[in-house]
Length: 138
Length: 138
DNA sequence: CACTTGACTGAGAGTAACTATCAGGTTGTA
DNA sequence: TACAACCTGATAGTTACTCTCAGTCAAGTG
Image 1 (cartoon, each protein chain N blue to C red):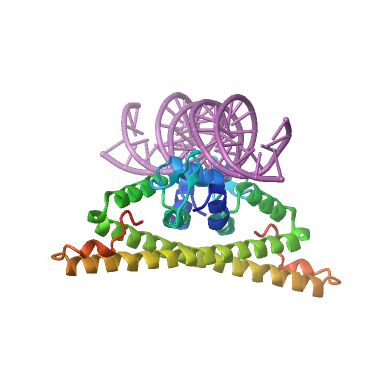
Image 2 (image 1 turned 90 degrees about the vertical axis):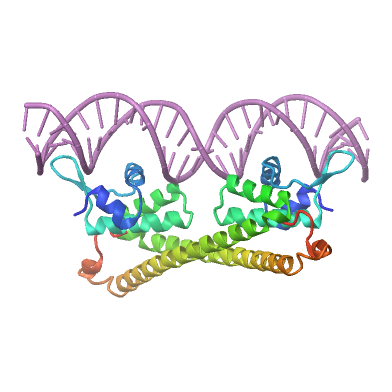
């Protein structure tokens, strides 16, 4: 059993966000002790894990709530939940592609600047060294 | 030369967002025609491209503005800009790692549900088929 | 010439998902 | 008795849009 602080550390989510998510109904099975303190079980951590996963792939909280509600509803919703996971995976793969593309842009820029710097150092004695430097290049 | 609409289509950024970015000072060199209509040059598209890139990697608009201002300032800021690109790349690579991890979670879930579905179908005649189904599994 | 289209402007409200701050309350331990 | 760690509710702030209204201007078409 874990306190909210321990969960925050373990799962790398702020306490604040965990409470926010709890309030949003994302952790319906977290028990409280006699002092009303949340006691996360290992199974509850799984819920945190999947919520964190869905969020980090950009799933809206509304949609997460729907998924959570399907989980609560029980086994009859398994095919639907399976489909959500597949769709989410698809989305994540697209994000991967997008990220790769943007990394290519950054690689290009890196080289661009690298060359500018190299030429500038080599030719700094040369009044013509500005010849390759576009003015106001991004 | 491109109108804002053409840029929006070409770069897959909404017109609204382009105007928002323009207002934020991200495209300082876009010319206007005699009717005050923005005319994006190919070089301006480069600015759109880098802004889009930085944004999609989570760079804040404030930080983007700083980068843009460095560009405007001219060649003396090249090393600083180079460093920003390197840092941004680092950030993007971290995001890549995070995404990979979350994809692993999703893969796990996919298999989890796949098995549930398979077993459920196979054993649906069997009153014991619930034995492997945790109640309220995420 | 009216009309539509596409561009522009500014102001202002709405949105998501936190994030932070305040204020106040309980409990267990040093 | 002070403190740390948990709780609550309310409220405000943040970011980066996103949307809506309201009004202007210029070019092209029937």
